[in-house]
Length: 249
Image 1: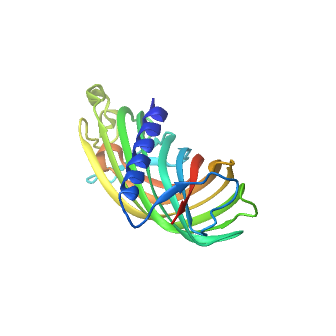
Image 2 (image 1 turned 90 degrees about the vertical axis):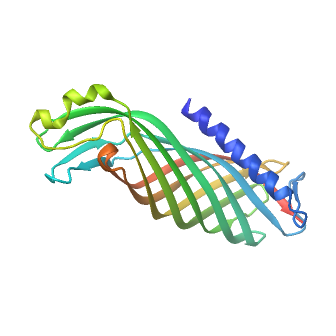
Image 3 (image 1 turned 135 degrees about the horizontal axis):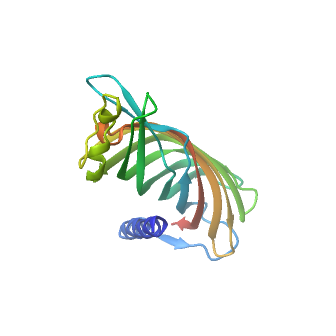
């Protein structure tokens, strides 16, 4: 269901973006209907991306009074989003700007373990994340059918975490020999700035439609306090893409 949700949102966002651009009388877009790149030497790439973040990092809750910590393994997180690349140079070597947005949403259990390895509390958490990024890219396109690219730049991240598990109250770590406070039935928001880097490949059909795959590295930190702890993201996101090459005239 998470994948279906992300696909629907990604398609809606891509549709809204396309409608906004088409409303501008000064710039028009047309799908490529041949195997060649646009003769105008002006085009952009649009992609819908789906991926999964696998991380070995942990969520860490630190009690503000006692200083004691509790740790929880962070689950894998599905991501989806849209990406646009605007070349400045063309033909076999491309250089330009890129921008895009990613979202992730998941319900999962966070099992926090204190330093004494005896204090365990499993909480049902709902986690939502939004990333907005922009940067530069470079690509090699030796033919009109095949393309390899790399990109990097800053990223702005927003996160929302909430738990609604009343049953965990009787099993708080404080009852098991640790002095750690965890907020139940509450939510927490956080924002952060970081950076990303990505690399991928694309194959284009005769109509300009593309499919591809790649890897994206993110680095930033979100702190959800006593609700879900502090989470540091320094991991790789593996993704697949579906896209279209448009010419601008």
